[in-house]
Length: 111
Length: 112
Image 1 (tube, each protein chain N blue to C red):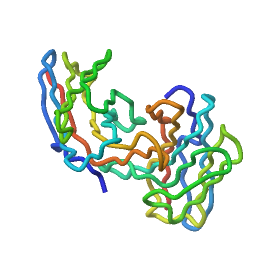
Image 2: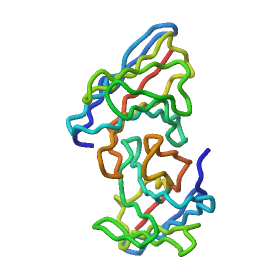
Image 3: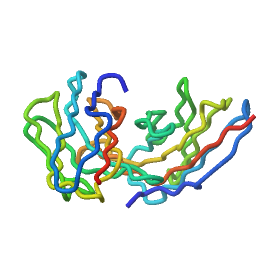
């Protein structure tokens, strides 16, 4: 997980609040991804980016927004948090090779 | 939807080889087979990947059938620390951001 930093690690939100999950990488990778993982389930792709200024939707984008103004940063924005967004969120990156590197995760609870 | 099929769980005795199967009958010519594992709720960890040849690294071996419709991940001497959920994933070598689509994986339990 070295090189991919996610903050915060834990957060409790009230319904309707907004927040941003931060993801920063120092590997100069072009590709970055946001996944969410619900209990007992596999990871589902929310959004991804193939480079600065370019983002695209994954499987479950509703309720989220992203931006990619720099190569290093790929923040995930939750607007109007809902209980269904209670999950673990993972940021990941990929460089010129085929390996994808994951961060340590951000645990979000919406109450 | 995930394009792979894995058994939901497997057990293995410590020190023995763990052989984890995966079916990917709809794999296309430019798609790679990746294996990742997730220990507790940590971020998934890369293990190995391959296109059509068998691959080996310090963690594991990957055996891909000649028709590429299935593969097996081999942990040659499983330890208790290998207890994890193992994900088999197929993904393109280019275009579309090389997204990884995760299924529910195989829960491997290594026991004494």
